Image (cartoon, rainbow, N blue to C red; front, side, top):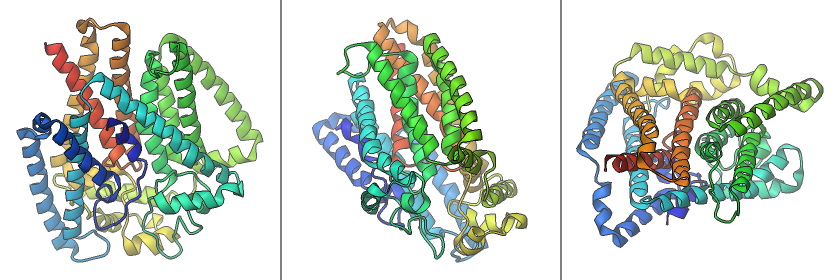
Length: 463
């Protein structure tokens, strides 16, 4: 059963906008069935998915504060298309709350032993291989103007691609899919940046952890060196796709992930990565000067990016929204109204603002500031404290690992997962400067997976 957890999350299409996205995805009913099956098979595990008193109190506190703040904001904004509305906001927020619980519960019920942990990661990486071969690779060929896969790409997009709401003159999918319309790779995500987040934040840290510790992972290889080579190649494939996605998020995520990889790697791998980085920078510099496609791509998405007015204006407006409502925020689903009140006029002279954002609502284009603007310090300070507390526990466990008298293979496994977790947190924190939906299934599953591993090690250290 554990083998299906990550692969099912690749199918990210949501089938209604009336609910939270995750509740409207195919993974939600699948996970509910899995939970029921696990409880039927192992009734004694029921106690493992009963939330602690602290979790219940924190959730209750969160909901009371948010309902009061949303009621206040609704009194200020009134009924307007610029906000989600108090009823719809409550429904969606309830969906996100259920999603967090279900993601935690499914990990609690299915990941029990180290064997389960290995099966979870192996199935995720194998699923990723099929995802890249069957979905992303054909999309890459389309971006190079190879028309052979156009029909195939559009057909699978029709079945599985997650879409934003579209408006007249503003449709990422007008030609049948995001790729054939925008010429950028997105997998089944609504746009390229979200594929970059999925690959860079969820899957690349796994490979960084495996290669940094040089461990034997795949059962069908004979030597540890073969594993290392395959995982290094796999990591480079993901980094290459992050560049080919043609998005600032992907390019910067690839760069930061590479630095973290070199930092965590053993001495031999570190020097290899440094040497490859130097060669890569030299080749990229030459290509930037000599190859028009490379030159235009780097300018368009990194060095001389155009069309950033809305991101800049939205970021400034979110900061002002938070600064004017620092304690309680403005409530989930209500930031759009206040963004439009605070957005600098100098950033509004563009089609996207005038024909979409100003009429239908301004999305949060910086999730980090969006969380503060929505929830305020009263929610965000405890949330950040809990995350840093978990990170501190992680570093403490890493320091105490030698006390367990583990063999080399076991030690490498634990160190690899700790490295993967810390790398994921750093990359997620970076991506939150832009947009990353951390409450989607893959992010939550991986977070609770790493958290449970740390807690299991703590229990072993206490014995």
